[in-house]
Amino acid sequence: MNPNIIALDEKTLEAERRSYHTFFDVHVVETRDGYILIEEGDYGELPMHLIDQIVYTATGKMADEF
Image 1 (cartoon, one colour):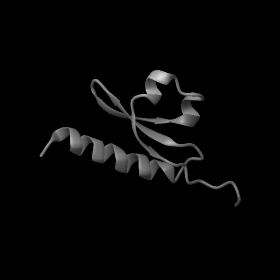
Image 2 (cartoon, helix red, strand yellow; image 1 turned 180 degrees about the vertical axis):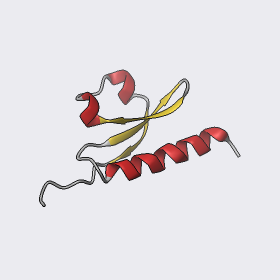
Image 3 (cartoon, helix red, strand yellow; image 1 turned 30 degrees about the vertical axis):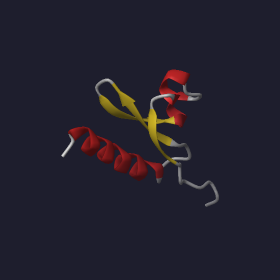
Image 4 (cartoon, one colour; image 1 turned 90 degrees about the vertical axis):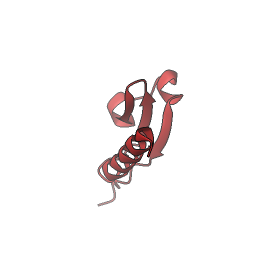
């Protein structure tokens, strides 16, 4: 099995888990060294070079209605 696919699957699941605890979208970004997670709330507006490398986005699921 391809290790890159396994790494992407792991980061996708991690992004989904994290999305339940944030108001912001959590992105899986492909880098030269593998995949990283970036939460929009941590960085504000993302620079174009990061946007171009997004391979998956988990929508923030926290609600402010409670």
